[in-house]
Amino acid sequence: MLMKEYRICMPLTVEEYRIGQLYMISKHSHEQSDRGEGVEVVQNEPFEDPTHGHGQFTEKRVYLNSKLPSWARAVVPRIFYVTEKAWNYYPYTVTEYTCSFLPKFSIHIETKYEDNKGCNDNVNLDNELKDQEREVCFIDIAYDEIPERYYKESRDLRYFKSEKTSRGMLQEGWRDTQDPIMCSYKLVTVKFEVWGLQTRVEQFVHKVVRDILLLGHRQAFAWVDEWIDMSLEDVRQYETQMHEKTNIKVCHEQQEHSTNPSPSLGGLTNHDNVSVCVHFFLKHLSLQGDPSRP
Image 1 (tube, rainbow, N blue to C red):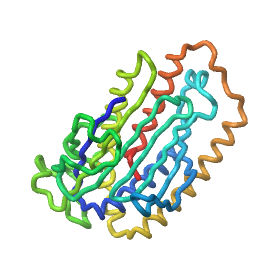
Image 2: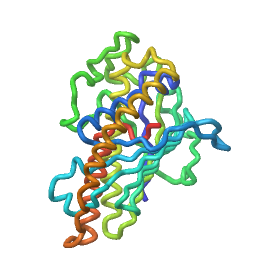
Image 3: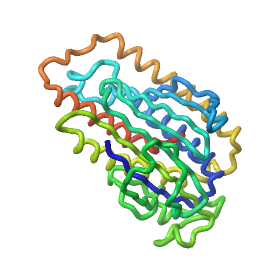
């Protein structure tokens, strides 16, 4: 198990980001399904927790077969998906990722949103391991490098300026002078209990998770003019519409896949199978934006 705490500041208030993250997640999931990354919404409904009170529970399945090359289709099941479960008690959220083909692989993310610039060293998270020593990593949405294949000039926050809020362009050191400002505190625990691969895979997963958090938060602010005038009711309605459109596409794709027999897993070692699945699990995550979403 490897645990790290990520801190990502945004030129928004916590209440504004509540709308922004929901909009960003719904829009991004729908876009990925347009490109064949099937995201099926299994559940999206109110949830009551004895500790955190009223919240929203969402379960999604992300089918990866459509993006697998032919050699990979020969070694993974026909129906191969990532399950995402998210409990949203905003400004506190929990997200878990598991893989249908890797029962010993999981990512657990606890998030707390606060109106500050990442200076709180005593964030109240419920994780039973919260007192365990971990590395604290600051992510700068404007100046940290992103993978070149994901760069878009319209989302470069050094040059982007919101017409509706007049926020941006973000200059170096912006976190010291920006008002308003908020921070996402994310405690990320990666488990991969496979002997001989655990340390290497857990470290690699954290590298990918860091890129995901950077990309997702950049998107949320780059799209601010699209969602800043929305109410919570507006964005929930938008979310429902996007989920319905996405599910229609995904269910159709999965019906087509299910008509073909599943390939055999013979001929490869356990480590080979693990490597294939981890690769495409992470490929999905790197395209999906912020995994902690709720």
